Image 1 (tube, rainbow, N blue to C red):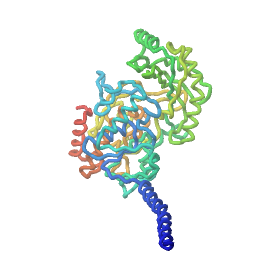
Image 2 (image 1 turned 60 degrees about the vertical axis):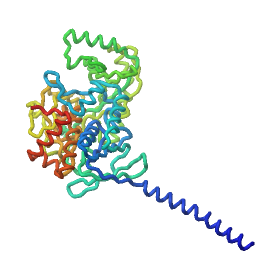
Image 3 (image 1 turned 180 degrees about the vertical axis):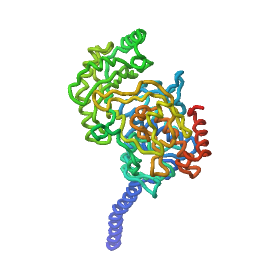
Image 4 (image 1 turned 90 degrees about the horizontal axis):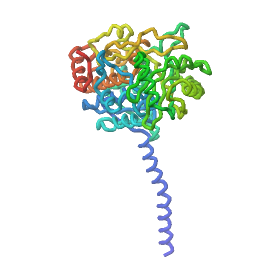
Length: 471
């Protein structure tokens, strides 16, 4: 009896000792499985910017499987993180929309100027509602998977799940504002434009901030009065939740520190009655350098109380305005310009060129903010309808990559017009269509740009998605 009891104790002890080992093995297996996730799709889109959302949507609507990866925790790009809540429109001389397709869908939902939270919700929902689009946020790029001159995929640090995400794809769209994927692939690029001192010049950054206590009715009444008195509508005006003007007030402002300035106001009324102000310029900010952007943000934040005090004194409706916050990031207008099969120039814009391989029309003026204090834009604020060639989205050296962002292949001057959200969304839609087409046909974007029959088919697909390419 005692011997049987001892044997039972040994078995029980053995089982008890085995349980932690089994649990450990199971946990190790689950951790190993969770340490990496691998996906295979037709199109990989990197950058949850408005352009990236348009690219993913366009490719999915052609029946291709898409995965969209955003390095930051939320989608929306400069809308979400820089609070840019007014569209800079491409209009014909008659006032008709030139940017249609996917952009126009959002414009009809949001309007010219819109509420920040509402816009972020609708951009996020735009991705979730597409059944063929998967998405991952908060996942910066770790490394590219190269196969010669093509990108076979990429590895990302999925910070939410604490694992590596591996996405393999037939075609890749870089929709990051700074062409981060293209730069990682070794695509050649120019930084800003050459300055007279040999260093690159880039347009200034802006810190968009929020104020409360603005009497919007009084402000609008003053703007309408000035317009009725003959004020230039390009510099003074109101349209729904958008208002702009008071350039002379900005010129009278005296900054409290160097490398900071104020331009005429661009205002966006929010649903809660607060107003977002786009006017504060910060010079000499390199958007690719974290130290430079941090210093620019620090300068801008120090200047804000002085700016708000100036607005209270000189802008009708701002008498009771109070600073209520600022965007989490600076609005960066310019960094890289990739070198593509074609480089769009200011001359192309001024001549209104219609390229055979056009994938979008645009007309926003060449809007170059001062590279340095005192610099004046030499281009008049006029709208000239021109086209974006597909070749300017195709970087040199890679066979299955398209760049659809403000960093597409253009000179600094030409990018002053084409960097705006409607144009980059049109680029994104075109890049998504080309990527989906090439994933199905087994061709390259370069072949599409150079072979008439392929180009015409892609343009037909774009028109079928509502894009406008002119006659």
